[in-house]
Amino acid sequence: MIRWRTTALLLVVLLVLIGVAWVTNKHAPVSDSTPTSWPPVFHISLADVVAVDVYKGDAHVRLVHESEGWRIVEPVQQPADDEEVERRLRSFLLSVAFDHFTPTTLEEYGLASPQARIVLDTGEQPVTVLVGDANPTNTDYYIQIEGEDTVEVVGKYAVDRLLEWVDTLPVPPTPTPTATTTP
Image 1 (cartoon, one colour):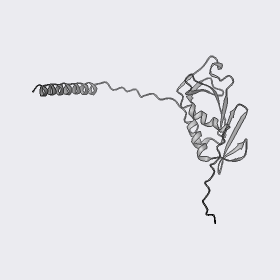
Image 2 (cartoon, helix red, strand yellow):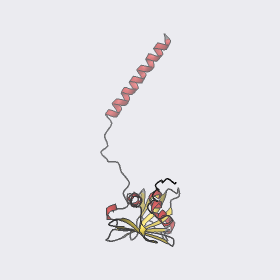
Image 3 (cartoon, one colour):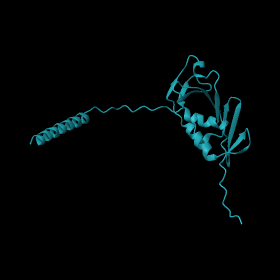
């Protein structure tokens, strides 16, 4: 008999707590402020990019968008893997600034002598992105658009994917050979 009373009492307490929570949330003031989001760094669409140059150390890779697709023109001339180039460029162009600030000195962020440069050519005024050091947690890069005072903090992944072109060109994959029978 005691077990039923205890269970019934706990059930009543639970229902009262649920009721209080419901009434409290129902009458809570509604915030009319919109949640903030991180601002995009670039205001360039993928369709507007006609060429991209990646400089890292002494190495340089240039890709040009032609009528038949993307083509590597530096350091060699050959077709590029269109899907891979567009995937990596889209990721880079959609980068958001997790933080942005105007520094007193660029040396502290590796931007006085950047480790890499990425030039996005839209056929009008090219946009040169200077890539500085990684942040202390090694998750983001300090970047700066040449000619601007602001330093942006962006995720490493999208930047690294473009910088990889210096070491591994974005060439189309080798097609799988078809099997043939041997006599």
